[in-house]
Length: 484
Image (tube, rainbow, N blue to C red; front, side, top):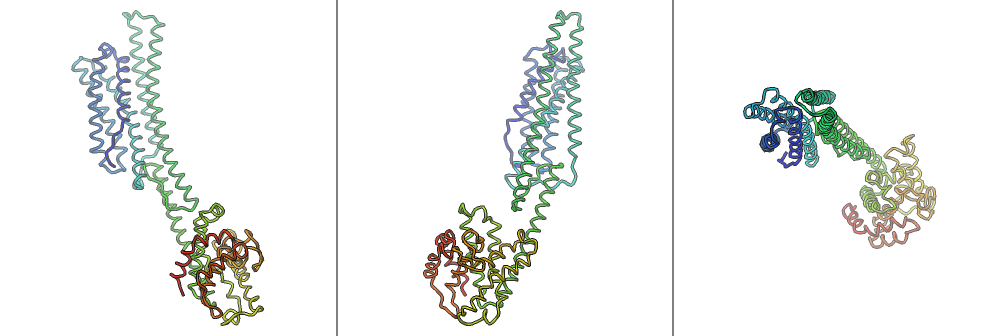
């Protein structure tokens, strides 16, 4: 993690200096006997030195450690500096101002108490920066094998916080009692009461402020984790299994993030296996139909590519954006080869006839749309609305329907024709026109395109014909790339 400059330590150190300066004067009569400059100057020098050592050590040592250790090491480093600063000031006061040991101990306790809260707050701040660094670089901490439970952390923090707060008030009460009972004290009880209440309010407000800052800081960290978790799960529910939760802590939340990632990876592998099974199933069925048809396998490849480019283009249009999701476009592409699966039920004498069909034979040939739809419907069973073969059934049964209702097998009209069938109709007719058959010559692209346009609003959905016009070059490129 690269070095960085943060103003948070400076702000917290300044607040700590102010609090310790006031608090020390209120709990220790020896400190209270000093002038303001005698109290503030040593504190200021020690805090400036502490802040400089903290910044240097953090960037040179802490940030060069493994990411997994930085937050804990940062806390230990900050707290050590506070304890060392408290010990240094205690020794200075005892040596220079001839303070008794008890007064020096009060100073040290002040540093130990405030230092604990400041160190926890700075550790939480570094945890946020660490998670941001991990997120920016799309990396995670190693999954925690063992970790100290959050319940234990909360218990220790609550216990230490209560100990320091109670201890701080105990020293304050002890000093105030000595002050009130001092026979030389000429202050009235009313004034003394007001003075003590002001002290309690100030100290309580300051300590409560530090505790609340830690609570809010931890809540912010939790919100970051939950937002990451929620975002990744939201994408997973929508079918995007490429996202991962950042493992940014070594605790239960890091474990939750790791397990979430493991679950998504398992779903992705399962999804890939299912996708492979779908592809094999479709291509196997398409190959069965191809073995009995006099059309080439290239026709299957070309038509499915026509369907794909049409669907991808229409996906950007408002009329189709909701229906043509990325997954649906992919399923249409995969299912298109099954548009003539029903031809397996057509007698060979008609299916393989090397010439133009008679009206009677053509009526039999027209049955392949219904046969294909019925066959896939039986295969679907009670999963008709959830199976990936739903689009194959639609394409097989409806690709000969016409926009004006004159098609077959059901004579559907307009938007009652499934979108998959309407797309396949344009793709199938175009490819049939530009392909050579025993009963006809191949049309040029220009002639085939003109016939498609003439069918606008009659044979074909006008919007799909408009898409065809916009994609003429793509159609020609596909026809050339997969030519017979």
